[in-house]
Amino acid sequence: MALVLGVALAGCTGDNTATPTTTPTVSPSTSPTPTLSPTPEAPQPPVRPEAMATNDEAGAVAAAQYFMGDLYWYMYATGDSAEWEVLADDGCIFCSNVLSDVGAMVAAGSTDIGQAPRFETSYGTTISERERFTATVTANQPASQRVTADGTVIDESAGGRYELHFAIRWQGTDWSILAVDATRLDEPSA
Image (cartoon, rainbow, N blue to C red; front, side, top):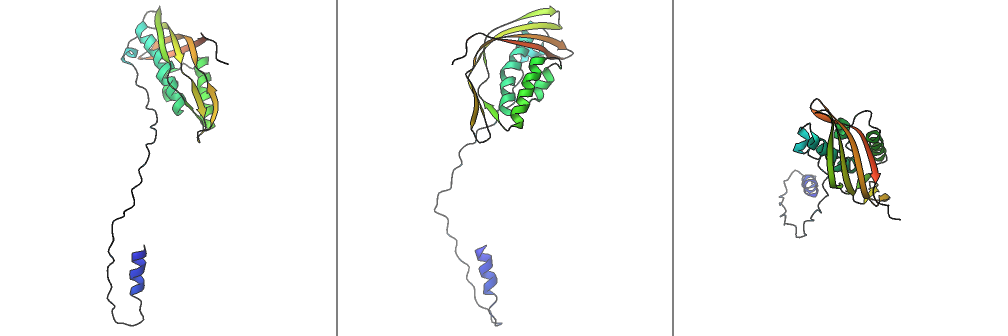
């Protein structure tokens, strides 16, 4: 900007004689180029396990673990509930309550920082061949924090161990989570 302004003023001398102009030499900057610190990447949407493609006990267990594992954590970390809504049956009260909590979190501009639960044990039971199943998983949920956009911690969870019972239906080509019941297996720390 200064070079353009200088050239424009040099042409306005009041007489019609041309004045020679010199082109200034630009020397390279010797100040170091600032390096940007890496920005934490947003969590990527979880990938469905291959076992979810089958309508059997193994598929039901895979669907339960996906739903309450990576998908649950991802939804709280990002506010993206689209996949949760695909899998949650409209009549699933637990699913609706979680969805309401995530909606309130997003509306408040906060997010959860934590990790997906680790599964210790799991098994499935057939209720109706290739259609209705139950799945029971024992999960260890790590501690987490709810934070505002500026990083202020507004709530903390110590985590804990839970036994989760699922009622699941194979509907056409996908799973539908009908109900989830969570029982705490350890006492929360005071």
